[in-house]
Amino acid sequence: MSNIAAIILAAGKGTRMKSELHKVLHPIAGRPMLMHLMASVDALEPAKKVVVVGDKADQLRDALGDSAETVVQEPQLGTGHAVQQAESALKDFDGDVLILYGDVPFVPTKTMQAMIDRLHSDDRPEVVVLGFEPEDTLQYGRIVATGDRIEWMVEHKDATEKQRQTKLCNSGLMAVRAQDLFALLARVTNNNAAGEYYLVDIVNIAVQDGRHCHVVKTDPYDVTGINSRGELAAMEAEWQKRRRVQAMADGASLIAPETVWFSYDTQLGRDVTIEPNVFFGPGVRVADNVKICANSHIEGAVIGEGCEVGPFARLRPGTVLEEKAKIGNFVETKKAHLGKGAKANHLTYLGDAEIGAKANIGAGTITCNYDGYFKYQTVIGEGAFIGSNSALIAPVKIGRDAIVAAGSAVSRDVADGELRMVRAEQLMKPGWADRFHDTMRKKKQGK
Image 1 (spheres, one colour):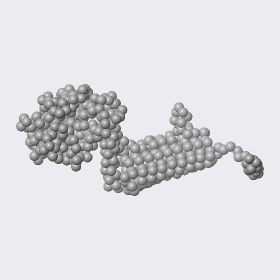
Image 2 (tube, one colour):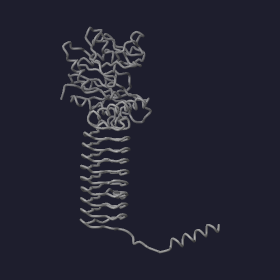
Image 3 (cartoon, helix red, strand yellow):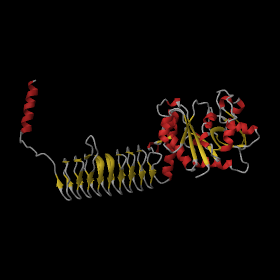
């Protein structure tokens, strides 16, 4: 565990989202944006994590559980005031403090570490600020600096026209020693256009005291803030674009990269081929030499080496495909484990099922796993053959090398090597259809 504390600001109302869900809990790549940030923080093994909450505080507490302490900012009087709310939680802490924002989710761990390292450099800066140079400086606060030494910081609304010409912008993220942070905050006033207590003022106070403050630069992507649905969608698109590039660099072939959507935790092996319009939800692991055909939706699934999935397949959580298993078009699985070489080529639902190696599941087969109250399991043995349009009514076991005849509704176990045929006796009436047609034609002509 390192002697680092993280203060994450997440008290804002997020009104531009127009949502009952807290802004920082809106997902990107299947994960709430706050949790992206917390994962990067956790890689530093911090001694303390304090999340400053306000609006919809209960949602944040539920999401965080016991992974971080929460403190409340009420009323909300600016970023400096927000950080002050963490003082009691850090009263006995004497290490370094990182100040982060819950709606700035993709700050890399290495960037956080660079800020801490700069704080401990030979000239011992009082505050380290994370800066960036965007193509459009928009409404960002500015950092006036010589080299990496900060001369002054100013919010956009308080900046002069000359200061607004500065391209170096303030991300709001800082690293400060705990003993300095709250002493500086105590001197911050709200004498500004918004009447708020600005966190950036601790830098200006330190500069006025003749102390050093420095800036560390990072890529604008790393400090992109998200305040609206449009910005959320834009960040999702940028994250996906980068993940697709990474997937191809790691040895996967994406036929139409812009149509493939990954989750934050998708794992792909080498020589995986992914056709157009494939969506990965959370919890997917794909081994080497797998082919995923077009228009498939996969989440919570483990796909073994040499498997083939789709087109138009849906793999739901709990699905496991062992080596060279095949799930074909219009097949849905849920908590289904297919052994090596097992096949369900088309038009099938396999739920709560164990399917042995090399079993063949015919078109239209359904495992009837739910009676309206409880779920039940179907077990299909190795080498079994299930004929088309069969209903396997769980709980039921189909033995090794057994055959279930097409059109059967099986509600009792089938022994190894047995044929089970469950059909009504066929009734034959020679000439009946011809007589029916003649009668109906005459009736129609009579009209």
